Image (cartoon, rainbow, N blue to C red; front, side):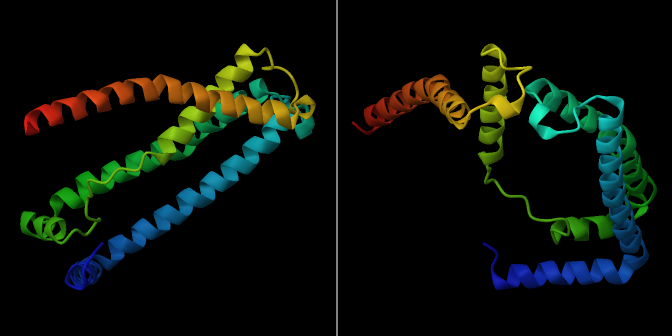
Length: 194
């Protein structure tokens, strides 16, 4: 948690940055707005195109896991090609043509003032766990032979029991090594203290 002097220092460094480089900040804001609008329009175009070309069925009750994964991978590919690559090129251009040309003292001032945020050692693993559970669910659907079975035929029992089995298997796969490691660490620490 930030203290009041740290918050004030953060505000002050932003004020200094905006005062010196307001035009570049405006370019960043406009570029971000264009990227977001472009991503939304691209997604809407792709949804309509995917239905028109037969990549996916028009009604959701006919979708299968195969359709869902194919759709998501195609959306991801289009987003990377049409939005992601231009954004990366823009960021690289800004870095090399603007940021690197700022005086070294000014860049150090921004770094020391944590203009772009203070890095923390705290890690959040919640996203990784849910990602692994969903990948496990996709694999279970494939192994069960329900890859090309429409979602409309799935029961709630199948959905809930599949997720439950994935969570149990993840607990076994990751829990056993973690338990062994924890017991080993505890044993080692107890030996040190004796």
